[in-house]
Image (cartoon, rainbow, N blue to C red; front, side):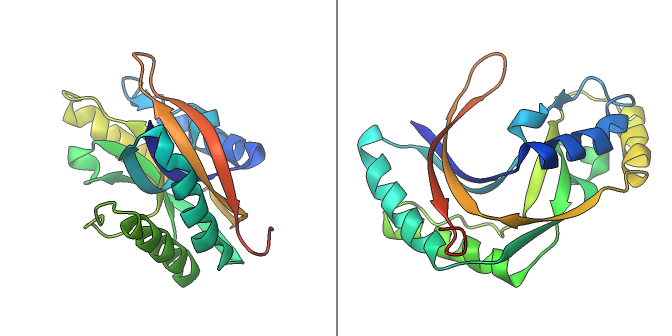
Length: 188
């Protein structure tokens, strides 16, 4: 199974983000825009694992997440990785917060304790809005950057769980399935 850990957003939060960034679609229709029902924050990509490992992953994440409560996500600002001139991913940002950093750290430690390789890159919380296919011209990317500066969306949502998700790749894009939800201690 192809697995990842996510903070899934409520339907109203996803709809509000989608509505706020709708103006970005016009200057860059060739981007692969993420449908609102798939908007989430990836906490940790796990990758391919045998189905037999799912119970151990669930238990480890339950224990790591249960130590946390009151983790806010301050969502604001549109950006691109690595930048708008060479964009591969367009995202809406999540402001750094020590509580979110500690949650990520404990999840990463739990994954490493299960024998997974340590993710060597820094945690840069974001919600992917679109993937940029190769060959998009600079004019489109400049127009997208201008449109992104005009987006004024800002919200703070409370994290109540970290979800173990499976992802099945298909020509239409990935299909996500919730396997298990690990509640934060305040939500338990």
